Length: 428
Ligand SMILES: Cc1ncc(COP(=O)(O)O)c(C=O)c1O
Image (tube, rainbow, N blue to C red):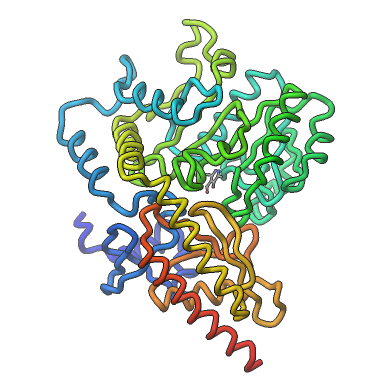
């Protein structure tokens, strides 16, 4: 079969997901992109877009960062095996040591896997093993993955209700309002919860950040009830908030941390579950249990290589500092739009995980203004999305390499789009 002769859009419609293709066509978004470089994407017609989504935060260093491309090309061309079930994955140890050093707290061991949902699913299993308990607590508007373990922890019905078995009554899941430490205390009171999952800054919730003191209090409440705290940093980990990990600002010491997306700069599917020695020991407790939990792609050479290179680039290029600076600039420019009173209502978030609230078209609180704004921005050559769990907010997860020019380009396009929407509102 010559794949050159197959129309990729028709084939996608035929054999992958026709409804996704319908949504994209209906919104007038580009269907195919042919090039990805730095913070820009180019579509099949040669149109360039500033990418403020960056693979939902995964393209942490921009698309196809040359250092990661070179490192991956080298190992692909080299002679090392990618996976060695009867040996040790050689690059896994060095990456694990680096991650633990950067995370600090008491995180001393790492389990590598291939995606965010899998990392969270594994954290649930390890928490059950370590505590002998079955209960899980998450926070309103949160999100922790699509597989059956994490899905009921989603703080929004959208992902669960339309599916068969809609009640999702398996397991013991409890949800407490975001930021409500007293409600958490009540949920843990019976000492039967294995783990609390928290995003230091919510992603799908639209960049809602925990106050550092409140997050520290979550840690204290968990410790008092023998419940493990899992920081889900699939999105926030590896620099996005301006720290290596989002939990670090609060001083809390999680028992486990999940990371994925940006760990490989978005170039290889990889995820990591960092944990304390105590949690690890509950699973891998003896030589007889050395393989008690593993996976075919665990410690794959490409993922490990990309991870080590991404950490090098962030350190050598001072990208944590840059993220804090450029995030502050972006935020300040967005605040100026808020002050102009043109339908840009508020800004929130941390580092380069920010969200901006757009007034609705008739009801100011309705999400239709944000949706219309996304479409206008795409037409102006800027890619971004509404926050899935709080849809009047536009979510920004650009590459950490965003420049002041990129900030100006984005805020200029947002201002023009907001003015166009304001005119639409005024016209009734
Ligand atoms: C905080 C968080 N946890 C888990 C996940 C699930 O990750 P994945 O889509 O890689 O399965 C996501 C994905 O958006 C996420 O943002």
